[in-house]
Length: 379
Image (cartoon, rainbow, N blue to C red; front, side, top):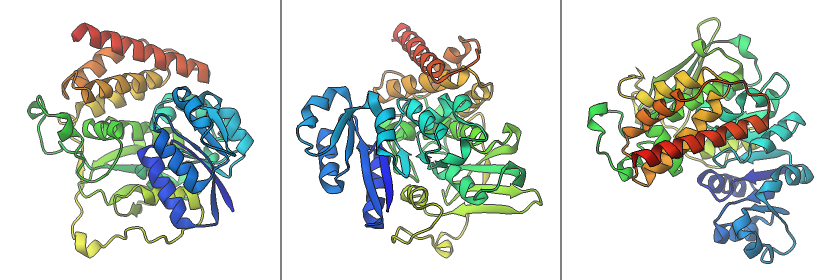
């Protein structure tokens, strides 16, 4: 039996992961879950899966502790030690933000397998998290890095000539930047291919999400930025391509359903049929690929240009983007303001070296403070 600990079980990806586990059956056991504020859903998940460990935010700790009889209920600040106590075969990090960063670092540094969809933690802490020893304990869950991982299946970076990450282009892929001045939040949340959480859906509309995936792939697979490319692919069927040294291309293709990369991470290295949607190529007919237009997606270029510099710009980028996406979702700024404020705020910082997880957290928090101050002056 494979023991699973799911961080972020009440979020969009966490709910999908538990759906996958339920379909997989008795060979997989959920030993731990964590949520944030959704007390009712967390209780439902506990009732169905009966995990031994349940992590919650400080706000709801006292409310839920007495309801979960027989469970070890803990505050999320104790996540590191409680996962180690649970000793799972695989921990899935499916929440957003960087609150799981230290837990990821501790687990992979001690040889525990982790399946990670938490872009923010990966990007902010990349220079501390990943090296030749720790990479082998990470299974990426994002569909595009998962596609690369599946193409490589244990081969090292010497196998790679080029990586190709695909992007749907989001809801505004056919609009010029000048046409985006007055787009509404509800329009930006209408992703043409994927069903995702609100934050990542806005990042997909700006293509900051794709810049994150380029940075993520650079560190996860130890590939130079100059060998990582992004293609606009409207159908969202080809998730990643790896060009081998001999010029042949390996691709991972599937329906745009996050349960597929989640299930692959859970069952790795095996593949299991749980009747998830299958791909019918004759029905799709044609697949399109285009280069990314930097004028149409300026935030992609901004995020990647600063992210490639590394050091403190990695946690700065994550923190500032988080503030700006939240501000747009609250209708405090326009969609087109995201790039201009992102560039302005990043440019206000100097690059410094990052030496520890504590450094990452401090830099991330300073970026949030600076971005918030800049927004207040504008509002």
